[in-house]
Amino acid sequence: MNAVVNGQAIAGRPVVGICARTAPVTLQGSDMVVSLALQSHVAFLSDAGCTPLLLPLLPGVEHLVGRLDGLLVPGGPDLDPALYGEAAHPVTRAMSPDADRAELALVRAALDAELPVLAICRGMQLLNVLHGGSLHQHLPDVVGHDGHRPRTPSFTLGEHRLELRAGSRIAGVLDEEAPVSACHHHQAVHRLGTGLTATAWAQDGTVEAVEVADHPFAIGVQWESGQTADKRLHQALAQAAGRSKRQPAAAILET
Image 1 (spheres, rainbow, N blue to C red):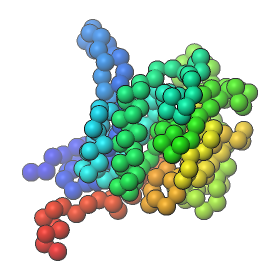
Image 2: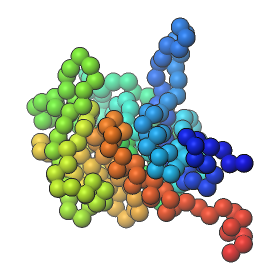
Image 3: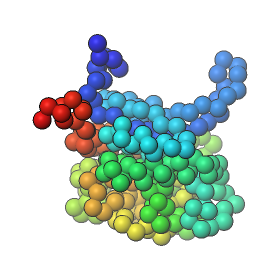
């Protein structure tokens, strides 16, 4: 009998890995650290016909790529600036160098295997660093405002109208002339990595999307996809994962 999630059989569905994040929580009065993923990432991918798989960022995690049909790299803490040859800015925070290196190895292996990759917020920054790029460590120093991460007592998303590169994959996914991003970040692309193309910008010039050249589907977006009801990027990743899904070994032997 096939396993069932939300009433749907999962056998045969594309498997999309989600890079785990760690966070302290209090559960039943006990303080602990857990590995987790945003539930909307799980739900959006499941609704789009995929089986989401949480991937803890441990050494050797890249060897799981052969079991995946796609990869989602979500938002998270700042990257270690040593990865792009810089010292930490005073407000660069919550760095996890070991997890950074495990995630870089995982994303590199996924790209080498031509798996579909969707990299969100920190994920896009990691994609840029992987390709030899660098980051603005504190964006307000560059653009002169806090609109990308509003300074409010509670978590608030900033909104920016996007300029899209005509004919780009992200333009095809969003399919509207002037979409508005919902973001929450204080870092952004500075020097664009080799082999990447910038395909969306905020009105202040901040790079809001990048794509890996000569790859079937590898997109990075700076906004918080998954923090709103917009499922278009998750659906596009799911469709690409469906196209890349490997035939079972038995089926290959029969052909």
